[in-house]
Length: 202
Image (cartoon, rainbow, N blue to C red; front, side, top):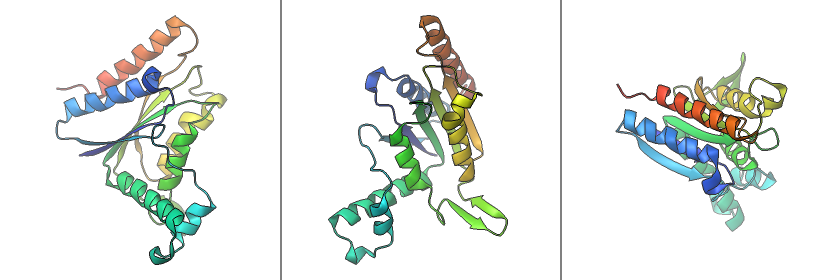
């Protein structure tokens, strides 16, 4: 099985989402030793944001692309190929200003492409990425799950990947991390417990 591991926190070693996503991957590898992992750090190696140049690159034949358009086209192709090749994904998504990091949104914009990961038909849209499994590692300083303040975070991610056809989605959540030591400890403990339960080795 091919697993794509995505980190997006800007906090480096101080990041709770990075710690937990790493633990998810390690637990998954222990449960299924044959896993091959591809890792992408969207903070250290940021993907440029979706722009007019991205569209121009996609609509320009390879022989007519200059260096800038070639970079855009190659980046889009590489990002898409990585995503399509994955059987499963672990995506670390800390909450920044009530939504996901802009680095993660830039990555999503590269994989949400009509005709490749979804299509529109007579009965509406159809996701083309069914069969993939997704674990979202969700972290937040406050308490937002199930509230209006969380709509742009977990709700957005579950809708977006559902739109692409991914229905097998698990959320590993640690929230309240900036609301004192007790809530921080509780949030991390509950997330780690979810990981242990999800990937218990028989």
